Image (tube, rainbow, N blue to C red):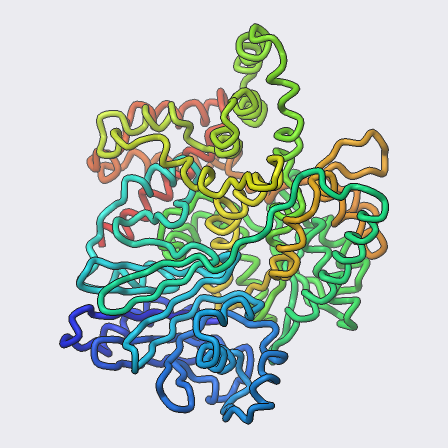
Length: 634
């Protein structure tokens, strides 16, 4: 696992500067503390920061060349089937010089060109420079596990694992993108291909770029087949699906354990992370190192008991950390630094510390990310599937009476959001609103008379609309796929990558192994989300739960879905209220002219005086201001 960057001057007579490449590398040194390397070839340059996981010797140094020196690669990620792929070339006496997966990618590219991508199983972002064709090739893995940003203005092309490495380049202006700002305040993050900065884009998952003669071409190379929601449901089909998923899970975890360094597990006590422990134990690993975070504020905000239950069941070498509000105040600027963009998921805070804890013991950790989007794990999926019943109610009830009653209930944020969202007829707009922080109406008020008040609302729905597949699907599987693009890649995977890499720790996600992903999207929705009135019948992640029945404690199997809750609500109403107000009402914040400060003051008072739950709104405003100070004002 590493950090990569580079740039290309479209003016072929203008050489790439090694000093600029090293500056780009230093900005993300945390991603690769073990080694640094640069390569320049006239107008092109690559830089690599290495975190050594496979072949710890100097033979793994990057940028790495093909034996004939024609191709040069900077690679971030892990290819889990590289040993099988390597055998094909050993039979052809390919002159390998290392035991790395990096060298296998070069060999594949030499033989198959861009078609090599679908042979790779793993997580990756890499760049290959062809010294003969003078072409730069850049690719990102199908699920977007590894991030990749790029910039192109007609004179220069640049790319990097983290946006901060681009912002050091003198030819990249620091300018906010209005669409990125709208996306951030709607969802808590920008959605690919848009970033918070104008002209800096995110390469979308499953895409590659080719840059030649000043022309940049983007191509989609992977797309799943989305199955019909009700196809194949029957006893025989269910048994086949059960056996297939069990086999795929077993193979995925086994392949993700390959490393020349210790491997642990992020353990929350939920179904997905517990499955990682169970599968490692099945493969003969004893005293697995597991890592969990809790809070010193009530049982609702702690997963420690559930994690301890799993740790005891599998006799793991278990490690815990309990966080306080002081930890948040002391670390918030570190979170801002590592995300490059304002990033509004509060769970980034505990993820940062569980990664710090794990990095003291291991260099690789397995995580359960992706299980909810693939197998239907979120409660909103249940509401979405059966929400049509609510919309069939008479308008007097669904549009007036029920919302009126709910709106009178103080501090009922989740209920109000559900009633507001379930009534929306457009399925794409409804999907985006399930987790929207600042609604369309609130953003209009927030940006009133400010710099972002004229941007179209449709921009915040574009990612959901573009990825909402209807071909062959009755709706719900297409919704899960859109969530995997608009939420999983840009929020949860970005959080996992940047918070783990902040500590030089590699995070691996076996549930997003491509064979599992392709299998999951072909499954009928009844295998994922369905209400059955029986004590032992799961309503969410049904097939996945059945596969794990023989391996996990019953209490974990029966545990209701519980997100990673962070006690911002009580902290912001209590002793942290002055911390919040000092940032939001500072002269610097006011003088920017971005926000309607009357609305900001109302949000603050509504929350601190207990009328409404506004901690997520305040959190987004705080992080945006701190990010602006760090990256725009510097």
